[in-house]
Image (tube, rainbow, N blue to C red; front, side, top):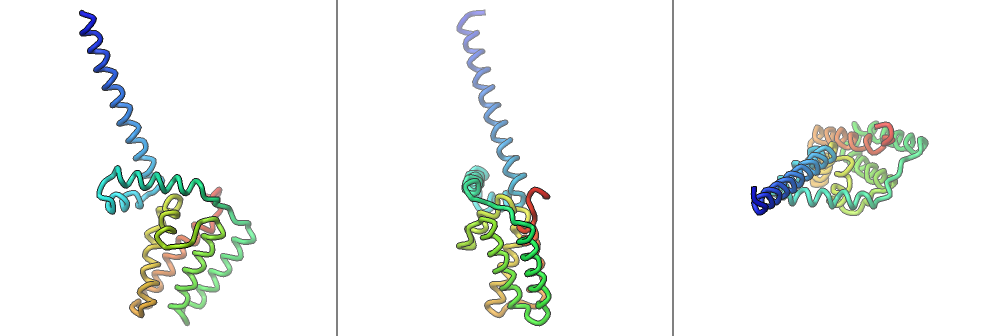
Length: 180
């Protein structure tokens, strides 16, 4: 076997090996993003129309999230929030529209106390998506019902659904992440 042929075989093998490693790394990153973001991964791909673009966006969200100072609540603060949530729920029958607004405010306050920035709905979605991607659709649905309620267009059943949706995110934010 000639030296040139041997070199050509080694170069081709090295290129194939590098390509294989690149593909495996890309698949591992994609799997990580799918697991971490849950349904939010598919939503990002659908919105972007391109998995690579969506994955860049999701990785940027991770980087931003890593710079946030997310804190656990003390048991006393968790109990205070839980009591406040119970109070909001108890008033639902008499004041459903107001209770949905209060639920939204309570979730936003809880986010702020945990260390999430609370300015801007879209930014809240992006920040929450990293750790709470599985309940993000519930937050979106609750927010949409609140917006319809503000316009006088939501039914009581939609408002009840909004409370259920807010509760899902509220309970997840309230939980001690070490117990999840």
